[in-house]
Length: 136
Image (cartoon, rainbow, N blue to C red):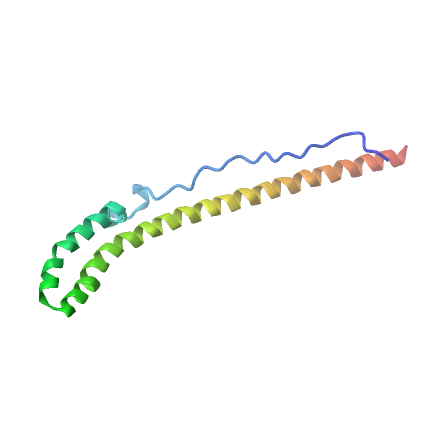
């Protein structure tokens, strides 16, 4: 027995707006606002370059003294200054990628839910059609 109607399945899931970052009103007072400003300034590659230049200023002094001074300069000055910004930049990039993946997962789940609803409606229509057909 052929079904006389056609049902096309097209997901009509609206695109979600990107996740909204913190805004000034979400922060608690002056300290929160200042912390966000400083974090945003330090977590850039330009800041890492600036810190690398600043660390290199003291390199000649470390070279002229001793081997332990060079090791100390690398560990305490260069790595701490430069890696701080580089790690923060990496964290920002990872967080953005994670947010995109989470949004895509949400959109996929929403599309699956919509598809299941459409399938449920289609099964209901088929059932109603077959019940009506069997009564005739």
